[in-house]
Amino acid sequence: MQGKEAGQKEIKPKETRQKELKRKETGQKELKRNEKGQKEIKRKETGQKSAGGKLCPVAARCGGCQWINKSYEEQLNAKSQNFHKLMEPYCRPEAIIGMENPKHYRNKVHAAFGEDRRHNAISGIYEEKSHRIVPVDSCLIENQKADEIVVSIRGLLKSFKIRPYNEDTGFGLLRHVLVRVGFFTGEIMVVLVLSSPILPSKNNFVKALLKLHPEITTIVVNVNDKDTSMILGEREQVIYGKGYIEDRLCGMTFRISPKSFYQVNPVQTEKLYEKAMEYAGLTGRETVLDAYCGTGTIGMIASRSAARVLGVELNKDAVRDAVSNAKRNQITNIRFYLNDAGKFLLEIAEEKAPLDVLLMDPPRSGSSEEFLNAAAKIAPGRIVYISCNPVTLVRDLKLLAKKGYRTQRCVAVDMFPYTDAVEAVCLLGR
Image (tube, rainbow, N blue to C red; front, top):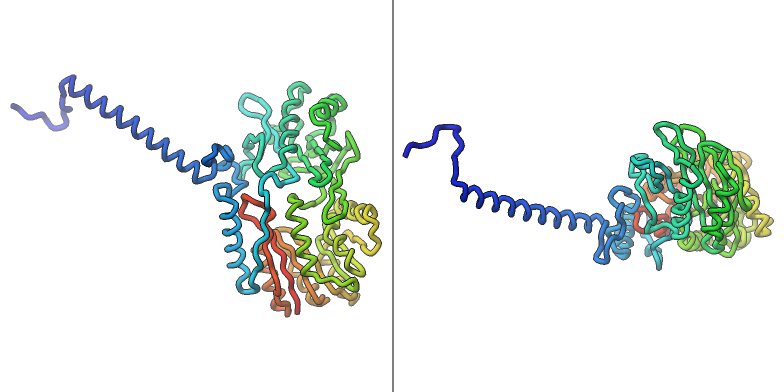
């Protein structure tokens, strides 16, 4: 039999070709099953699915809950280990303070609005490191009532001919919805962030929303007409209620406005502040400075056990709320200042005003070298440092150590379950 020429395809009998084709199809099906199984395993590993079904269908795209695949016990252990490693050169941390119920703890919910390819309204969370909206109706860590209100607002848009804002074209009206819930009071504030101050059929829209959610206490329109990544604009108009809500914390009542800073996890905030007061060791004779005071929460709590408290904050809305909060709680030994914390501390240092305890709760970026140098110059007997970023905390502890301050006690508080973030409290003394 003559052999086939080089490059010539071998012609096989029809029966043989059919058998091989069948084996190939079977192999492809098996491969697809394997790929499907591998994808299923991968989803479980990324936390998208659990034994009880879907835990979060958008976990991989959202990126907000980095540790959604871990049990809560595993999360606490990992956070504790990470914190111990960071703090090892300075102080041996106390046992991490966790939550009894680590779900739906966020009392502040922000939803971005946009449209899908069919021009249907969507609302949800920005995809990690982008401005692409991941549609979300409910979130494992957000207040459930707040999520329901966002969904209801989205459902009303079509009937009121309100289009979501398009960042690319600049057309559309509704950019964001912000919902803040008073955990202990049940009061609810809805903030509609619009690209224009005109809300079509405003009164009817309010009536329709209140019919669906009579529990809403106040509704505010915030106008953001700039091409910016900032959520809130400068102008506000109260279209229902008093324009703010109140909540209770550590036995006191606090006013919360749309722009006010207020901790998003009130249950853990109480534990955080109780630990801070324990570290402060107030006896009723001290002068206390609450730096980066926000709406005055920690300073007002300290005022119950101090002779005099000063609060300094750069956000004018927060200072306004702080003053109102002090009056509301009939506190007379606290005074608030609208100023940069570093500059204010330098002024105190120049005046050589006595300061016994410094309470500081800076932003994630930590404190400034200017502020820490001024603090060391005033030389308070105790510094209680509350931090939402242990990395910048350690940086600042290192600088304070050079100024003669030793970290005496520290503890991590799990304010943000299912994420890799923790808050921390440290006590420093000379």
